Length: 124
Image (cartoon, rainbow, N blue to C red; front, top):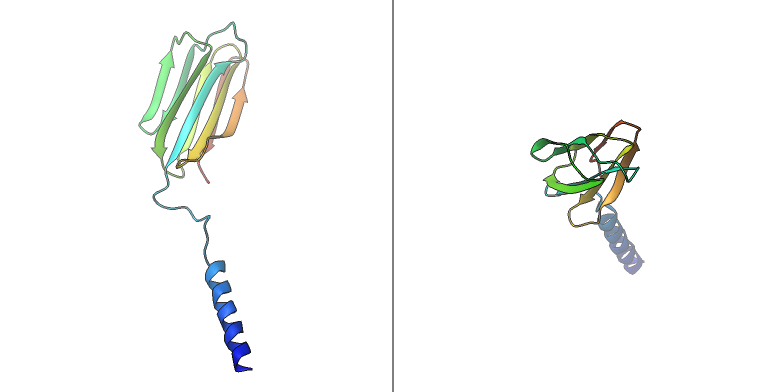
């Protein structure tokens, strides 16, 4: 009976040790990156005016002569709100986010006929 009690206690201790580990807990050292894509849904029109929130503040572009623009900013911390606005003919904004070295994932997208806004707060 004593041997059975020791083995049971050992398995219980191992179970408690591993079940108390939480790998999903964010680290204070986590870095997040935000990738913006601003484009026209109609390929014959240019993105004329847009702005994005970056790790350094708001960056604005005007008279941009392209149908597609993308840029990655960071590192930023959890809770950062990525926002973008664009004006054109059928502009589309896509906001992607990445944690540390993980691949980017699309977090939000929005399209409108003349002016569009999109935002996403990093929460993973």
